[in-house]
Amino acid sequence: MSTVLLALLLMQTPAALDLSLTVRHSHAIGSCDGTLFFSQDGVRFETKEKNHSRRWSYPDVKYFEILSTREIEIHTFESQGITRLAQDRDYKFTLAAGEIDDNLYQLLVRRSPRAVVTHVVFRGTEVVAEIPVRHRHVIGGCQGTLTIATDKIIFRAGRKEDSRIWRLEDIRSFASSDKFSLRLSSAFETFAFDLKLPLERQAYDLLWRSVYTPGVHSDKP
Ligand SMILES: [Zn+2]
Ligand SMILES: [Zn+2]
Image 1: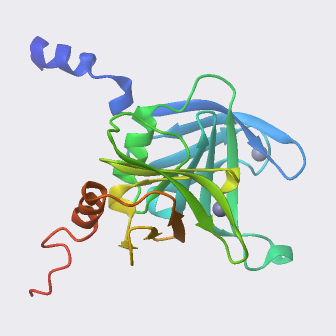
Image 2: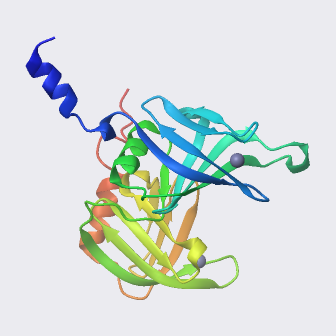
C-alpha cells in the first residue's frame, strides 16, 4: 500500500466507520450499563447484565427514535413475553456521557430502511415558514408551532409527547383543503393541524415538490 493511500485512510474520521455510545439501558425496574456500537451493518448493545446484550441488523429495527440529544430508543420487531402479547419490544438508552450528534443521525438515516424519528433538530435547516397551529386530537387538541424548513418539518407541541421532527422525504402525503388546514402523514402516523396563519405558497410548493416529485409517483412501466 502506498504511503499516500495509507495516510488518506488514517485521516478518515472514525465517524465514517463506527460510532459507540456509553449508555444506560432503562428497564421496567432499574437499569444496566453498557455500550451501544453502531456500525455499517447493524447495532450492538454490550452489557454485563445477563441476557441484555443484543445485536440488530438495520432491517431488524422497526425504527430509531432520538428522544433528545441524550436519549435514543430502539423500537424492534422482537415480541414481548406472553404477558404483553401484541407489543413489540422497545429499548431505551440514556447516554452516560456526550451527546447524540449529526454523525450518528446521518448514519441511521443512511442505513435504516425505515424512517428515523427525531425530536432533536440537526444541522442544515433553513426555515421557510413558521406557523402557530392547533393539533387536532380525537377529542380537542393541543397548541404548538409548525416550522416548515427546506429539509424537515418540526412540530413543537405544548403537549410534549406530540412534538415531532419529520424529514421531508419521510412525509408520505399531505393535504391542505384550504390555507388554514394541513394534514401530514408519515409511514407511522397522521397529524392534522388547524393553522392560525395561512399556509403560504412557498411552503405549499415545497411540500408539494418533496411529496410529489415527478418520477416518484409515475405510472410508467
Ligand atoms: Zn439492560
Ligand atoms: Zn397534540
